[in-house]
Length: 272
Ligand SMILES: [Zn+2]
Image (tube, rainbow, N blue to C red; front, side, top):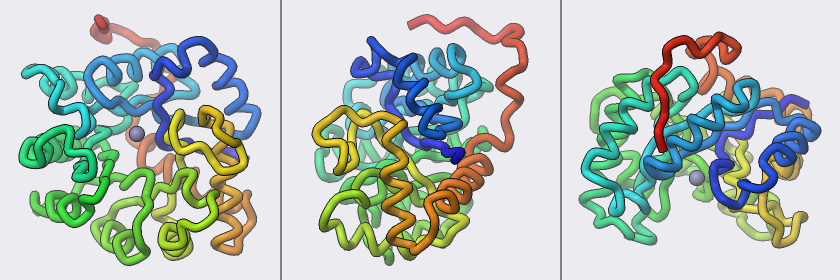
């Protein structure tokens, strides 16, 4: 199998000690590429650094998560915009709305999300969208510019109906560990209904550990559990789910980029 894990937080301190082994286990499990997704400026910088350190395995997404926007400095988004132009960066995010936690007041979240949406449109890089109890507003803001950037609604746990509305806007739907757990029938219904060309998989590691892995820290190698669960739900072979989600991820995140093998040239240095 050849798998793309479209959403990881491998920059986190949970992976500080053994990242090389985690990546080896991912490769052994068939994971070809992993997206390292930033949640604030420091995390986005680390994702870019990791994409440089592991150019054949990792690509970065840069953005400020709605739950971290409140703590961001006044110039942090300017710096995200600068990072977004770098060749190691394959996407903008994660961004979106979180009306469950509301760590950031909703109006500030909406403005931040719009700024990320405009950045995706201006860079031509896809948008990675988080939503918690806010899909209606996310869909409204995405449609508001008249032009919807390509993107993904990550870690989807909603209904087939809501998934269908994202698909209508051209979005992809990415499933994580929920489909491996008992219950979660609404999410499983969505996992059956999303059209083949819009289906993606992710671990969202270290979070969202699949059911069979106990309380362990999640890691990209465990994505095979989600692929097997999706295969069972859709009555397909796991290899088919792996190949179609990989084709979708390559088209969304990796099509427009210069080869990662190319020499770094005069890329600006990163300070942390
Ligand atoms: Zn995330």
